[in-house]
Length: 556
Picture 1 (cartoon, one colour):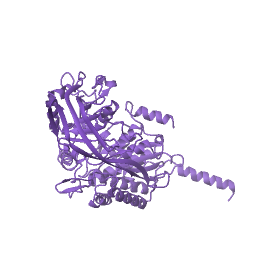
Picture 2: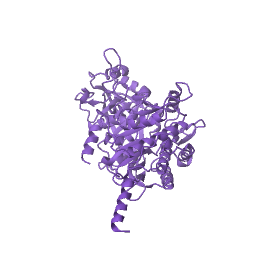
Picture 3: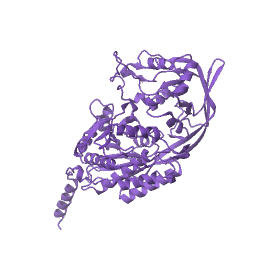
Picture 4: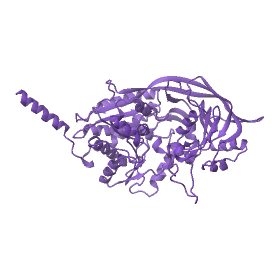
């Protein structure tokens, strides 16, 4: 063969390899195998895996299982160093309160019971933390939002004080008593309503302590969920050992908070109503807080498990569509009905199993995607989205070449639906891809049915969004085919009340994954089509993350 002919053949081969993939109909994509999904869920949520807590035997078993499965699928190690692991340094802190949470007013002292009335913890990497007669101040919802002309602190210096804050956003009312949907999003929660924001703001202002009042409806889960998470907590290892955070962070039950305000000569409900207005000013409660917490600490290397499918187009293989699902749960904790293993079948063995099945689909689809696909099984989501935060802070591949993130946190367990819920619907072009795929299934997209719960800020996609990467966070549909209209809402409420963060989160005899199979194929279609698209998906105009993305792409 002549050299000229060889060069022409090589050029032709390269052109064919880079030829854009023809759009595949949804029905032509690989089907989702629910038997494999269910088997993976059963394994990962078995008692042997001990609730998949970071740094435990459960992590070791989980990481090995995921690695073995990803190898069997035929994927490549996702870390550029040739391994399947991105190490995530965590510090585990187990609080051991000494006595109770003491509130004093003059000569009178009331002891609130730790873990019954008040749950306290600290991020400080130190053997002991305490509040010692720290002045308590009620600061409403603890929000500073200059763009909304809102400041709950009104210039009060809270350094060294313990602030008491309400959960969620201020429910601002219009003159006619209706909910104002222009300030803080109305019924929908903004980031100002997240407990993470309240702790961050307290640290920024130098508060010694911050206690959030728990109410089940606005929090979206019962106080038992807080109580069940009162053991060891993990944080990312930081150079200052987290000493910039408030010494004590915590929650107080509604009943205990009412008593606390009564001690301060205040009516909780009246102050709560006032806190929903711009006129609110901080209210010193005239009481002090004292608590001492001993801490057991350990530092571990946890793991994000990462697998890759290299794209077939040479010019695009360095760009990535990422999928995420968190593998961790709560481990072994407070017994409930004699069971202490928090198996986490739905949350999130189901999402992990679905993501592995989607990976099998990507490996089987023909033609292969043009861009590369990255499958990230992240650690420590239950500890505050730590694994995804670590990846977003220290990405294995540049975020300005990360085309999109698709996150799977739980799957539909109850049958086929005529719709698909998308958390944050309308945020980016990814929703357009999803709508087109759903139409091929004769389904429609619906917005979050519970926007007040702030789900957009409560799962791993959020850490990608904060860095500007368009992020898609789907949830189960709500309209179940062949079921009564309230069926979906009832099943969700039952799960939240009975199984969420409880040992009873196990595979149920009545699970029906037929709807999950349709959802999974749709999730595969979105990622596959984005991987083959001519342009990156964008945030919609006006989205809070658009400017971050625009700046990142400008530096590409």
